[in-house]
Image 1 (cartoon, rainbow, N blue to C red):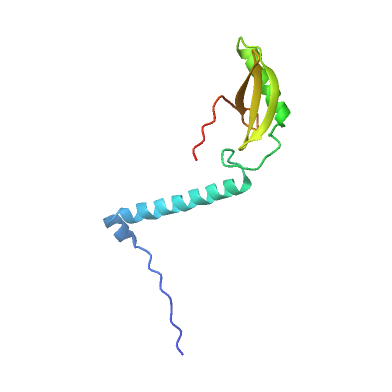
Image 2 (cartoon, one colour):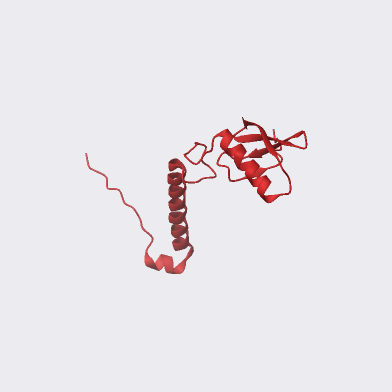
Length: 123
């Protein structure tokens, strides 16, 4: 039995000179593969904060998030609000505030960095 040899043809320099798209296609492919590897590596390690679903050490307890919202509103507005209740709601905290004897629901991210007045369901 004769062994068959495998030939890999690499474009010659003269072919690249005649058709510059060959080189640009090779470079674009290499960059795309590198970008995919970087994205997959970062998402697997959880370093893309907006994609991470794990609760890291930066998450606040429900009570801490509620106090953060109350402190923020009392110091940045002319309102005087009190914390009534905090519950977890679809990955965020629903913070019920007491203002002029009315309960006003607001929402905070679990890390306490963002305050939302309205959550709109999309499904």
